[in-house]
Image (cartoon, rainbow, N blue to C red):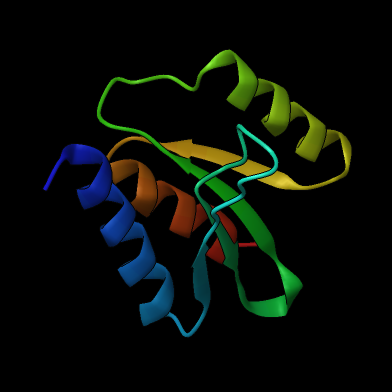
Length: 94
């Protein structure tokens, strides 16, 4: 399993352990959308782009992230289990 799949699996498991959903996004009509959408308690929604360690989002992904943020959505990019842990702490602390 490659690094990205390991991080994505870890994200899904950590979110689901807390009773929330981490839905895989497969958007054939819109290139660049984040990989996952996490529906957290209290109506929180976080779009998550998962990358292999050290990888950065492509230009089209950054464009989509910005459009989502302009619409008031939370968008995060993670490339490690540690960043997933930080994401969980950030959104569960709110």
